[in-house]
Amino acid sequence: MNRIGRNDPCPCGSGLKYKKCCLAKKTSEEIGDVKNLYYQRHKIQLKDNGAIEGIRAAGLLALSTLDVAEAIIKPGITTDEINTMVHDFTVSHGAVPAPLNYRGFPKSVCVSINEVICHGIPGKRVLADGDIVNVDVTPILNGFYADVSKTFFVGSPGDDAKKIVSVAKECLRLGISMVRPGNTVGDIGWIIQKYAEGQGCSVVREFVGHGVGLGFHEPPQIPHYGRKGNGIRLVPGMVFTIEPMINLGDSTLRILEDNWTAVTADGSLSAQFEQTILVTEDGCESLTPFDL
Ligand code: MF3
Ligand code: CO
Ligand code: CO
Image (cartoon, rainbow, N blue to C red; front, side):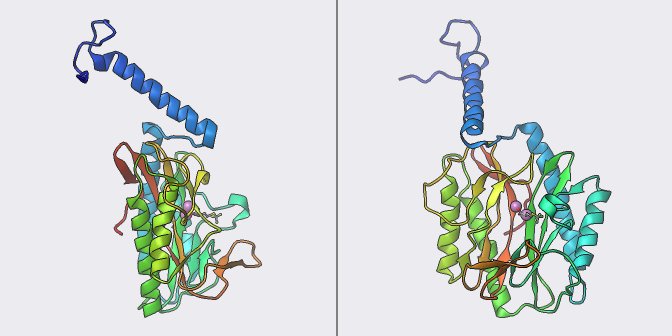
């Protein structure tokens, strides 16, 4: 069978090129179908080029924020100092820190030290030599959200700190490597769980990646564990975070009295890296890219 070329006359007899006639119609109808289907079935809003540009700009601001945070991190500073820096930097760039007052969260950034898995509330705690500290920033710039985090060493890390940070980083890299149209949400969690558990570490279940961009936490959820081929199929225009929280010990967690801070039940170290990922026609693009 002879395939119709994009520049061939359209088989409908309009006299137009195929690409200007039925090919274009068919594609836009198909795109419309997927967009409607994903919204109706899953409440997932596929992002158009305008939204992608907006999220990318928020992502670049988020990355600069992490760079400035990294520059002030050293033994002796408090987590409140990181909060002040993130807050002022965000606001001075015309953005709003999404965490502030989000479901009652009292600060502008999550800062999670050692056994804190996530949602650490900045305060008087002082960073000590050998600590690991995750800084998780989410600016809202012109209405668009990007969500990114890194775990930093404070001073010189011990062997446990090096191990958990390296495993968590590799988990994010592997998760991202599964993102392309046709793969599923389950493929992402499957590869992360396989690697983390293979390294003798564990994957937190209670917190997951999420759609992001027009809001802070949108559908779908992106678990960092799961089975190959399970879950929603990835399509171009989806934007979501991958943010595996990996523990050196058991995956069980406990929430502190403040109703936010999640810590490992066994007191073991926990590390996390997060990026905001766009599914493209032929793979993916990080909208908050950094080396992994
Ligand atoms: N940034 C976190 C995430 O990756 C969410 C923090 S919610 C907050 O999804 F209220 F604690 F800021
Ligand atoms: Co997130
Ligand atoms: Co985050």
